[in-house]
Image 1 (cartoon, rainbow, N blue to C red):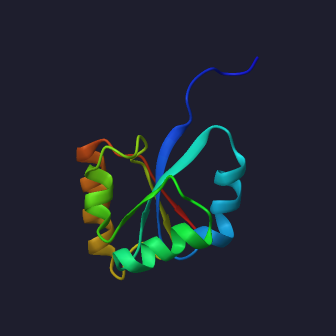
Image 2: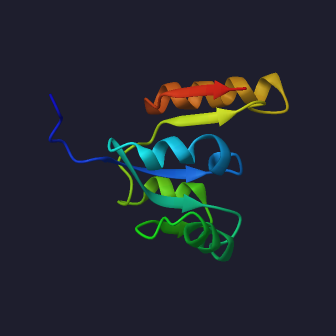
Length: 107
């Protein structure tokens, strides 16, 4: 049975996305990439053009992207390493718990 739900609007942030996550996300009818965050708006717009994400909006701050109304999914997938210290990792884990955000670290 096919779902009649609209695709989940997601944002992407980070350099590995084009090789690891983007191909699947673009091929799935369950998701649509509506936001791209990069180090500058210019580089975000270049990525949108390069990867044919014409319905996406560019952001230069991940906080702005997550606060926007352009995405539905605010779960966090982080490539390894998460942080440079155990203390930072514990602080981020606590913050995610307080905010009710699902997180996963891939490597």
